[in-house]
Length: 343
Ligand SMILES: [Mn+2]
View 1 (cartoon, helix red, strand yellow):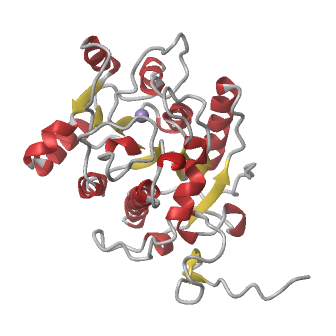
View 2 (cartoon, rainbow, N blue to C red; view 1 turned 135 degrees about the vertical axis):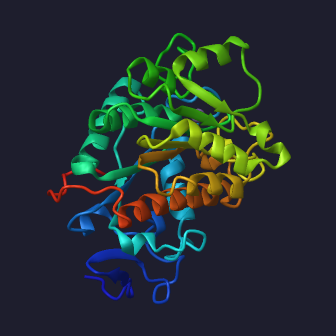
View 3 (cartoon, rainbow, N blue to C red; view 1 turned 90 degrees about the vertical axis):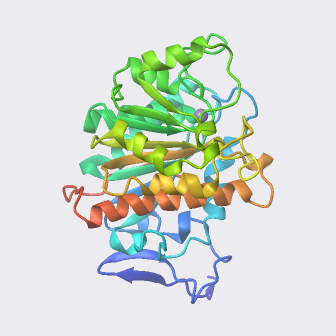
């Protein structure tokens, strides 16, 4: 038996298993879970889980997001315990754990979508909160199906260069351009309060916008931010959202391609990192029931630029969910940790 791999102690607090302590084990060493958090099998219970959904058979252009979850994990080694902007310590306030990747077939989208929903339902049992690492945007459909079963129709705040509300593409209804059309038709989302943020680029036809309104969205386009009206946009977004339960879906292509090149369908003129982070932080005090960060495609990335951006975005989302829990905005019943097949 080989021993002496070195020490990987965690930063623990009040029964919460936190990150591997970088003061003892350097950040570049050891396995990459998200932010060096414990795996789900290493904790008795958890409040918030991260799960990898390495599925990209729904991509219309450049594929490769199936490699996204592990790229984001490896890019998240620099996430430190204290969130400066929020003044919170998300990984010791609540138990956050990495649930690993769900084993998904690349050959059968319907089966993969069904398997993703089963995993999401099990991981959110008892009101636990879940953030998915993609994978392409198809995964938001099973995530929302699971969320709606528990919470009813949720407010979807969707950050993306694109609408993703097309009815079908190339004769197929399940892909990364259709999840929010399907979510609307299936009654998974609140059509009075949902919104897109960061939309831009070129569409097939002006009717895409009309169909999007019918699907129940208000659009906050990226070019509205070009004149420095971020606070106005945030105020207007929250006027739309109100106090309803919110699911945050973040396609990394919402960011300017220069700061997130590793994605399948980049469009010039995107949000800056500080803008996206500020909008996520604005959901502090709102009932964020979960979310996803999708479309990170490492083969098109350079120097981990996109992976780092995604890791920061996930960190901010988890920080908001954790702080909301600490403030008593959401809670859950203490039940046994469900068994989830993960790789
Ligand atoms: Mn998308």
